[in-house]
Image 1 (tube, rainbow, N blue to C red):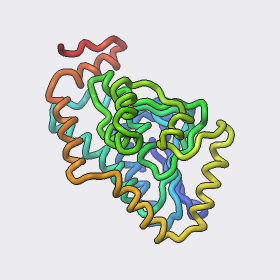
Image 2: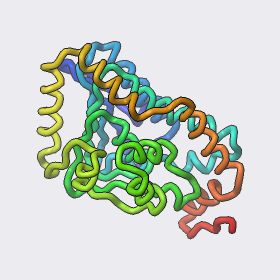
Image 3: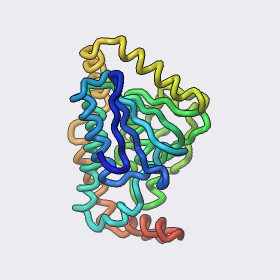
Length: 254
């Protein structure tokens, strides 16, 4: 694990926690790798469930924009995509059910992390968004996942406009499992974990495998890498990251 991602195993449950609250748990490349490592470690430890959560008032603000500013060419972009997709792949392929406990709102990659989990519980007053197009990037995993889960029009409503989605609306759309009052999130996750603990691990693994199989198609990872590489072959992605860091409006190419 890293300084900003912690791992704990107790009573058959592994907890992987984003622990960078001073930066709203914004994800660095090392954090993406650490989350993937934690998910794999849970299987080695014999966990019956994995709880993915965050510290502080926000689950995750998305990618650390400084990391995006360091991406200077398509090769760097593909390496970034490999790291991020490696994390989502670890969650999808894990035989252990992953329960995301949103401790607050999530944006960009943070929202995508919540969508990648098998079951997600969020507080009613939290909001979720994919604002990547506003900084010259694109929600490569989120757009793909959304289109399959909620249909193209709803996916476009989020991925193209970057608008915020409420937790209850996310449940209505089938993105999350439950939206509860802020003080009830822990209990709701505990109920889910207890239910998983009463089930056959082999049955859970098989069921999860087939649920996820319906959301994938051959060659999709390469297509997502190519999309990010294309964006970083032009000026907009770097301009978007730099403008965010400098606190100004981006000047995108016409």
